[in-house]
Image 1 (cartoon, rainbow, N blue to C red):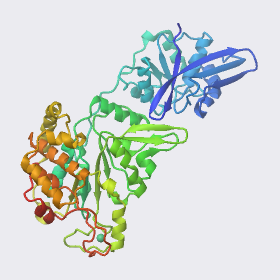
Image 2 (image 1 turned 180 degrees about the vertical axis):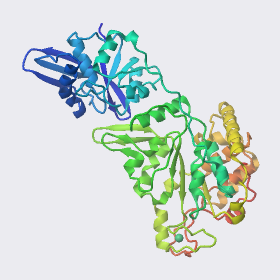
Image 3 (image 1 turned 45 degrees about the vertical axis):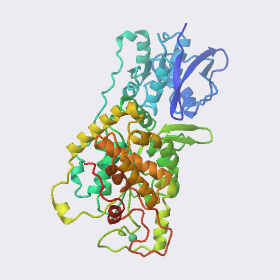
Length: 531
Ligand SMILES: [Zn+2]
């Protein structure tokens, strides 16, 4: 039986295979294309006669009917020119049918050359493999991306003439070999660049060890953004599956050349719209949160983002995927991100500065803090307040722990978490439930510390769970099976105080999200250390 000629269409975050059928017959010369083609597919009718004639294939006189199956699926996003041309040539017996299921994915220009790479080539290749089609023909510039789909044989051919040659003698052609995954990362960014800020570094290391969300607050110039930008190099390489998921999202935005094994780090600007951050548009495209999948989403100056943008993050952060719904299209993109955010303590930036006075009015402060809702605030596991480093810290040598030491300890932590996974039912504590953490080992002293904190501090149920998760990560970092009192103290030192409701508070320090360092020490005396 003749193998069908296949094209593909993009639908949301996936591609689907489409069967292309052709019939020619007598009648007035006209070309009909049915099966819900979009404008790009429809216009192929005008390009085909010229492309075929350039390669000495006569375009049939009379009626030519192309049918795209299944008919009820809208065809959009991917070119059908090559699939239509080959289907017509096979129908006219001008070229042999492909020996096996083959996806033809390219547009043709008037000279019959295969056009530039189409958006979503990788997704089409993955859909092909899923549909038992292991052969794909596309333009040379797109073959590299297509070859990233495991199990596909992608051939990059120059023009229609070469495609016909390929179908006559496929043994003369070799498929594209995929580029090896790239591990490229910037080694210029090191934790050692940041001087002082011991407490913030502890928080950042714990955040990486347990994939916790982290919020750093402090006056301008304290090194918040600098620290955040140095965290992604502490993350381990992606698994092959994760790298492929990240590549699929990137393939929806433009051509790809290789898989990257490094986790993405996305830092959208504060002026980003909800569409830029969450995704959208016509056709639907993923936004920054999906592009940060399996990596870090960094919101520098978080309160400067508009409230609808920040509120839109709540659902994806909770469900680890972003769902977009438009009138005639919908898409779901994975969005398992680690959220790192920074903020100034007030609009002028100096509310917590030891020397520079704050000039903000209480009303201004109230508005500033209202931009971040309680539920979004609740999504953060670690809160840390930073104050300017001292002159001695800035001039002195880098503070320990140094990069190499941190990288090694994080590797050991991951091994420990993997070993413990079978026994306790979770690796990193971010996915653990309250019962799981309590049952896997909580020293009575640690439980006592938590009880006291619950009595003293306004800790919600979710706050207690987040505290326990961070304490679990602190224990993992020390390779301890039990959560000890010092782990609990440390976790509690990273909880925020609630935002004050009063607008008549003294203007020098009116509305605090974070306890001052001295209060943290008083409330949770001796803190443990993750280093
Ligand atoms: Zn201020």
